[in-house]
Length: 81
Image 1 (cartoon, rainbow, N blue to C red):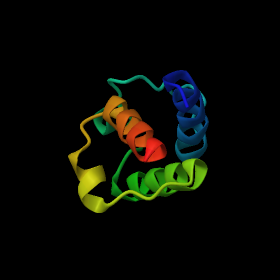
Image 2 (cartoon, rainbow, N blue to C red):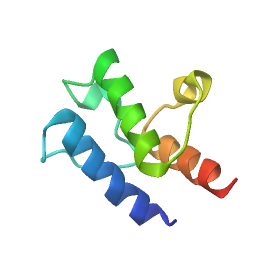
Image 3 (cartoon, rainbow, N blue to C red):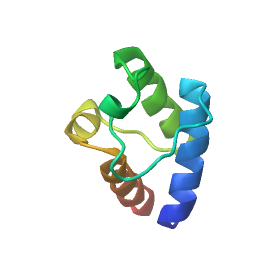
Image 4 (cartoon, rainbow, N blue to C red):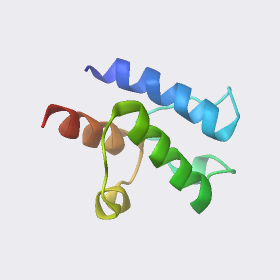
């Protein structure tokens, strides 16, 4: 799966979880960029991503992520394993 396909799917997930179609998912995007991104929506976001990509992430893996770009790299690494 290439990066663009991952970003396209993540964009759909972000729009759904945050109920905001104006969100532009970029590698630099962080929780501080979206007002509604709190601990509860973070859990919903991770679960939605896990379901969509048929992957499981540990709390430690997710806790280390600094931005969406790092999440994309984690998705690519897990999907290739």
